[in-house]
Image (tube, rainbow, N blue to C red; front, top):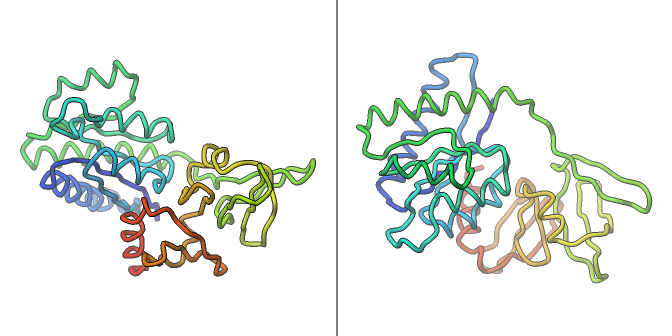
Length: 259
């Protein structure tokens, strides 16, 4: 079974709900029309540019994004195109579908060299919007499925030796008391490595920066304590997260309860 992350951003609550329902319907249609296809869309939502940017760190690479171009009635506010640029900087393989009231706005994405896979007009009749989304998502999923699933690796230096391990085995990286040193916490123990949190965050966007001094592997989070602003990771390690992530952590706590 292939899990594919789908991120939907629209500032209109009714439209956000409609798009979410349409994506879930498309998932059902994809499986129904091809018995050999087994795919699950993991849907995340945002209702503003800033909320979306805050959530990007949680998104795996090669995800699908449905973005409203007009994210605010204020002309000076960031748009869905600005958000798409942020996404593409982090994930060059991201599949972006723009949703807009005005088809003519699509030229802006060409001016800024954003490769969108489709443009969906909001005022389409519901059945036509669903059909368009079905076709687009089918093509995108086919493209994603054709790409081999390659386990991402994490590399670091131990003296002159380069050590490589599956990124999935990384639990966290924490700033050490020694300058330009990090404590790497992994399934098999700990290691002191050279580098900074900023450097590692840039090289491995899959890791989640929860504070100025800590990166964590989202898959290694076992518990969220929203009262103390702490995460409990695999092996019992407890780390503090920034208060600015409180809303995201509350949502994560709900997700963990469903496991």
